[in-house]
Length: 106
Image (tube, rainbow, N blue to C red):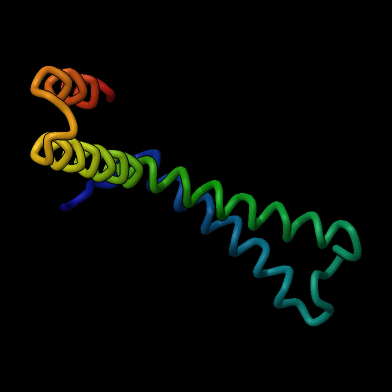
């Protein structure tokens, strides 16, 4: 399955890269974080990782990865439903009602 990056996703990647490079520049200075010391350095590192995680989740949602997971779980539910119908655990009316409910759940 191929995904096309949308413009906001590309902008997000560029912004995260810029943030990373800005923080990396502070780390590579001879004195560590340069002017940042103590709590300010901890806050900057925490903000960076929060931005990386949030950006990763946002990018995954833009690429439709969460939709693919939802679709896979729906397929598993319908497969289980078919198995229960084949085993005689539910009747025809229940099968079609549950199937209709699962397919309507977007």
